[in-house]
Each structure stands twice: as C-alpha cells, then as structure tokens.
Length: 371
Length: 91
Image (cartoon, rainbow over all chains, first blue to last red; front, side, top):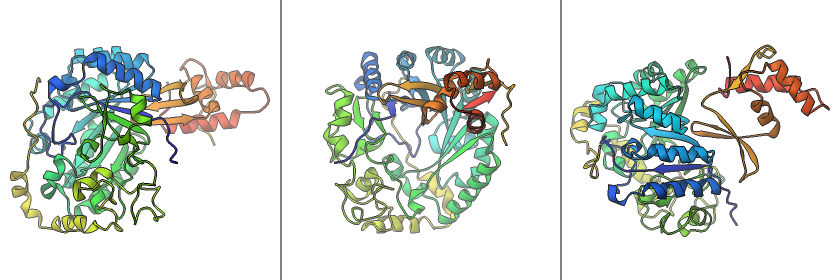
C-alpha cells in the first residue's frame, strides 16, 4: 500500500487566455475557452477545499492570470485562509493600480517570465513586442515591496545568451531566477527540432550556471531545471505522481501536474463534480501512478525507482503513447532510442539558426482573447 | 563563530510567512516556491523575530519558556543560518 500525504501546493490555472504566443507553451494543445472557465464562486470554493485538504501555497497561473478581473478576490480569499499566494505572470496587464489592489488583497510574491535578454528574443519566442512592459512590471513589483522571482525557458535559440539573461534579471532586481530548460511535450514537442540544443550548448550553459550561481550566492538564488534529454536519468515526475501538489485547470479539471491533461488514457475528475479531497485521495486519475506497484521493468526492479519514479508520465505518453512505460529519457528505458535520435539530430550545425527561427510554430490562436 | 549580535533586531523577511498548519499539526515557513517544515523550537525563535526585540531580549524570553537548558549557542547558530537562507533580515 502506497502512503499518501496531503498536498502542499495548488497550481490554479485560472485562465488559458494569454497575450503571448510562446513556442514552448506548457498549456495543453487544446486550450479552454473563456466561457468554460470556472466562475469566481467556483474558484473560491476550490480555495476553501484546498486549504481544508492541507494546501499551504497557491500559485496563480494561466495563461495570463491578470486576464481575470476577479484575481484580487481569489487572492483575498486565499490570504484569509492563511495560504501563501504567488502570482505567475508574463507581466502584461500589470499597472500600478493593479499591483496595489493585489498587495492589499494579500499577495505574497510574484514570478515574472522573460523569454530572453532583449526585445528581439521576446519577439522571436513569444511573437510579442512586450519586452518593455515586462521591464515596467518588474519595477512595479519591486516598488510594491513584493519579492521578485523570475523565470526564463532555455533552448537552442537562447542558451548561448545565458550570461546576458542572468545579467538582465539581476539588473531588474530578481531575488530568485529559475533557469528552466525546455520540457518537450505539448506545444514544445511540436517545436522540438528547432528548440533542442546541442550537447556543446548544454555543457557551456551549465558552466555559466555554476559560475554565476557561486558568484551571486548572496544576492540571487539561481535554480537550474535540468535539460532532461541530455541527462542519463529522467526527472522525477513532480517528486512522484500526485505526491506533493495538484493543478486545477481553467475548466475545473484537476491534474497531478500542469501537463497531465495530455494523458488521454487516464480518467481525470473535475471540481464541478467532486470535491478536491475526494479527487486527491480517492480518484482513479490521482491513484493511477502513485507509488511503485504500477511500474514496468526496468523500473520496478531498479534501485532508482524511488529516486526518479520512472520519470515523467507525461513524457512517456507523449513519446510512446503509453503513460505506464519508463520515461524514454532514462538510459535503461526500452524506448531510449527515441531520445537518442532527437539528441543526435540536434548536433547539426549552428548555421541553421535562421531556418530554425523561420520554421517555428507559434502558439496561435489564443482562445477568444479578452486582453 | 556567530555573526548574529545580541543588540540586533531580527525580523522575518517580508517574503516569508510563518504559520501553524492545523491539517498536519506542524509549523510551516512559507516562501516563494518553497515550504519548509520547522521544528517547534525553530518556529518559536522565528515568532520572536519581530524587528522590535533584540536578540538579547529574544534569548531572555526563550529562557522564561525553556528554563532548563542554555539555548544561546543553538539560537545564535540558528539565526545565522536563517539569515543566510534569507528567512530573517536585520534592520
């Protein structure tokens, strides 16, 4: 019997509406339209149920969460419930008045994304001219006294600029910077050929990360999210399937992680039909890959089975069509050849950059954007 | 060797939130992207870091609550650590 504990974190994806068109968008291929989004009262109920379940931290995300005019109402309720609130935003839609209202409602911290160190990088990755608005957002966040955390998704087209990206985030006043190498499922898988870096790029970037981490130790905390295609072992799911946190999608469907909606072979549940407690403890979706009983070989007999938990279920499903197989990133996986082939293909010459950019698939259309 | 001095007035960093979790009956320190489960004694020290009390006063208060042992080294060591981790700031 697998021991299950209460979750610490809730990722509330309050909308899929977004002004950006990022080529590695982590939202599902099928976006939820505005009319299918949970209403204010439904989100408040989700927050109540989450607190009762043991959730201590709420990450308000999207899409762009600022697209919802009732965000302050949600923050206020979370705050009343004693939950720590973190806003994950592109920065578009931030005004001084909005920041003030969010702070008054009890917002605890903000995570701001950038796509690269300048306007050109933002345009290339997100098909957006928003770079200056992001700079303004960073200023507003700092002026409001909120801790500024930043994140950037790394890939073939910006990995060589890592030093400059880190400089930018230091200049903007980030306390913590998440350097997230692209994870290849959903929209990013469509652009894998254009985004997957060469081994030399990864090695050089890791050196930059290590050097800057030590240099900045007292000022900025750097986090390195592994480029898993270039690793020997897979990333450990989210520390194990349905173990520490849950994600509520804009339409109320609940998943163990933000990308699990792509796993069409697993039956997931909605907060419109069940309470969060039942979904966490009892639902078939959340129990599908808990513990180690479900594991195939070579995972089940592997000494790393409780280190990486067979790797990412979403990646196994995306690459093999079976979420119950070993993550193909693992050196021991029967499907490892799929990853090896992609990595070998990425060793091609750097001169292809222009054709890589020209052939990117941008995330469009945005669902009935109200921004 | 501790860096924390008895005359300093530590306070919890503004990004940090300290709370008792009734579901788990545990003391939690909540930070952006992180949850730390604290021991009861660590939580007791952090609760006294209000920016007004000096470290000396904080130790005095702890001695009243825990008279049987000398906590000075442990508390100073913990405060150094908490500062380094960014949980506590000194005004």
